[in-house]
Amino acid sequence: NTLVWKCLGYRFNEETNEWTPDEVFPKWKERFPEPPDMIGMQRVYSREVDQASLRSNQALVRSIPAGNKQSLKKALKPLGWTGYQYKGLTPNKTRRAQCANWLIFYREELFGYTVEELRERRRLRQEAEAAAEKKLLEEGGEKEWKPPVKEVF
Image (cartoon, rainbow, N blue to C red; front, side, top):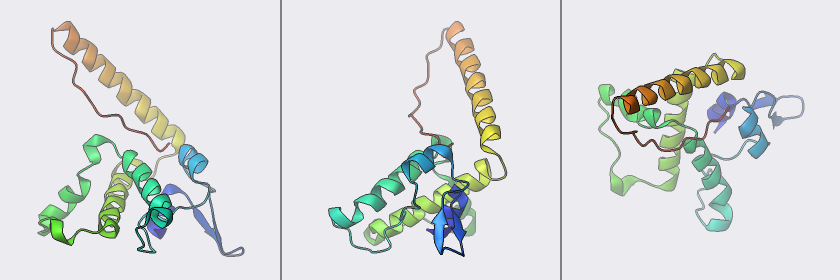
């Protein structure tokens, strides 16, 4: 939880002993002014207890572009990781893996950039995609379907 919070921009104030959303991505800060439990630290999976953790983790996963969804597998496979066994998965392990995947995405795509720089990169990427799509349609090809992605910045 703590590492994801730091990467999202939450900062720990040692004087007040609280987490503050000082540098949190704007859209994330609007939805989660307090750092949410991403992995379900209570390990109680009843709807009443687990709902907030589930929703925050889902929001984190939705913020990862489709091209980065398998980053955990790509990063660990060269190290000999063969994947998870279905029988061994729990909500806690699944959420930990999803947080690890988001951290890899953060390291590769977001780390070291300001929100303005990230917005400019997104604009340039969208323009390039639109130009490529226009060229494809002019040549008689079909538009490729892409799943929607919610950006965190």
